[in-house]
Image (cartoon, rainbow, N blue to C red):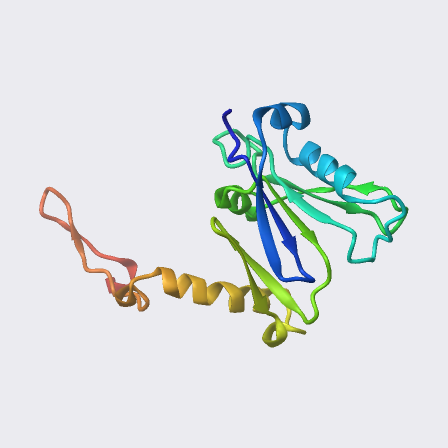
Amino acid sequence: MYGYMRRILRIDLTQQNSSVETFDEAFARKFLGGNGFAAKILYDGLGKGVDPFSPENLVVFAVGPITDTPLPSTSRAYVATQSPLNGLFFDPTFGGRFAITQKRTGFEAIVISGKARSPVYLAVDESGVQFKPDAPLWGKLTKETEEAITMPVQRSSMPESSTVPKPRSPRSLPSGRRILPPWMIR
């Protein structure tokens, strides 16, 4: 079955734990991807009369089988929940890096339930989720928050010698002529 990693990550904020479920080809064929997966998860997971603002409500982030493929417009994802506006299924799509990043974790859907005791943010990777304290980020602007979260990840993934950029040296062409970077030209 191409395009699927066959994994769904379930996150419980109340208990601060998670579990990974797998699905088979029949599930994938029947519900097809992001929107279908989200609808099925909500249909099975929400009881009748659940208050949209309660911890029993679910928020599902889902991607489809062509996400992160060479086809055009494949960086789309779905977020689905029970709408607080009318109590019905709410499933907008969105684009950007999130869908591709989620697909590369190997989770077709990320299902969030519960209510955290204190502010946390979720760091999701191939192995699951880590619950990180959000107190230092509380009240920051979006850009400041993103920089604070991603900077430690970027630094830890680079070799120590590459954290400070080194000036480039001139390159030589096969003819022996040298190409100078713009900062060396006077």
